[in-house]
Length: 227
Image (tube, rainbow, N blue to C red; front, side, top):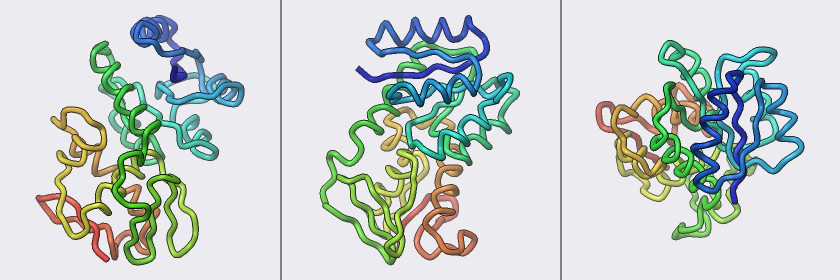
């Protein structure tokens, strides 16, 4: 049974999310600010975090920065429509997805399931033991990526995007195709989410992200990996 941590300073929201998710069989842990969330992650084995952006003591941006120092667990931001800038910043520093308030219970469950599936079964259906391109090596079973022999720390979403692109070298894959395959969800209006993750991935695997050797953009069409 996956363990989900819900962190939001509004107790009504936490209670509502707990009802949605516990009824689907998830074990729920609750926190009401970033400091409490970090303490819960030290005490329990958490498989996914639902994290509010605006909170007292330590907000969502500060919290995910601390989480990413030690964990690649999926993090889904809870945002209001007026917090688009914070949402983009959160994706830039390691969030995997976001859900906009007010919540649709069906969407919450779908996003949680898709992110957990990617995190808990990452690489289980890969066709090769290792994918290599230039100095980049990706091991699906070990969930490891190295650049010129040095280990890289990727989030589950970044790993899955890179794996998808390296499975199809030289092939252009559109943002909608990437989202549908990686998130296993409807791709409507998701181009910006993919672009943020690709940009963040490029910063990790490219020596000069502004002039990438491997992860290329084909304007108006999508992304591809080249040797």
